[in-house]
Image 1 (cartoon, rainbow, N blue to C red):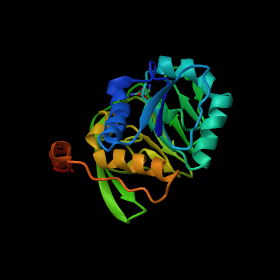
Image 2: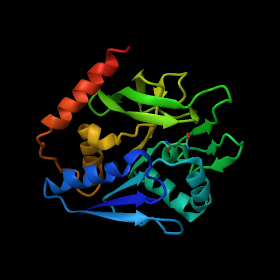
Image 3: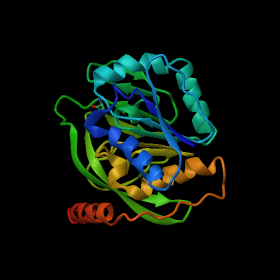
Length: 248
Ligand SMILES: NC(=O)CC[C@H](N)C(=O)O
């Protein structure tokens, strides 16, 4: 049984990030893989089962401030332990920002993060716009050495800067972490962070399956996923990626 832990489901669900939960759930069900969804709200502990995917969606500054305190206690420790143990975690935008050291709001408030990634996020300057639009990212797959593509939508004021931390990938079109250094997102062990809403996973079925496979293989490293008929999603992905790549 794969457990999807949906962190702050009712607070951090900007731009349809709940679609990430639905995509993982359906792609498991279509394969006859047992899957359950557990909402993890304020004051609730994360309870790993050994076959888990933790999802942390996007949110406005107000929601981030409300839950930053909740993350600074035992829940943050538990999430760091999950990542160190090779657990699968995906943070999107506001959730991603709070997986770093801190997120500084435009009002100058530094919201403490969980410290999963060595990164921090600064506010946009008064004369800077929010980073908004469609994004195309090239993601190296170290396991196979090939490069995959990810598409999505971004809308964030924060500018994220990586320290000793790998990016998820390189921006081909769009802004990414900060609109300056060409990086998008972050990755460490099996923890992923990204600015891509969309929602991300329905638009990028290969990434969804990679998260599912990684989680399943923590229990049984011989598991394989039967392929699904992704032509519709694949065509939508290819046309968006092609359009965006044409903007290089
Ligand atoms: N889309 C989001 O999750 C926004 C994150 C954060 N509030 C920012 O504006 O950068």
